[in-house]
Length: 137
Image: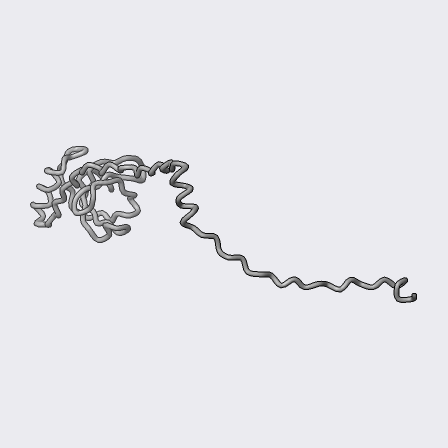
């Protein structure tokens, strides 16, 4: 039923509703498909076989699949692989080293910063508890 060259329609997944041709059988339940779909393994449960069978070789190249679809007058999308671009090189940020100050500069800065005048604190005198003995006298 699922031999090489069989025209099918995918019924599940991202490529559902698109036509494909079986290019190779991987095992009992999976086949390699190509056509309007991406060239990839597919579970046979996700395929609906059609009556048409084409003579193609096992692991046929994309050009042969395109020829088969041109005979059927089915349009294929030609996709080009993405161009590999160089990854940008990350430049690490450099930490600034703390500047050592001379003793004279530290003294000058200390003179510039005047301490705040201290506010006078109100001192409250707490009454001491009177002992019982003192009360009785």
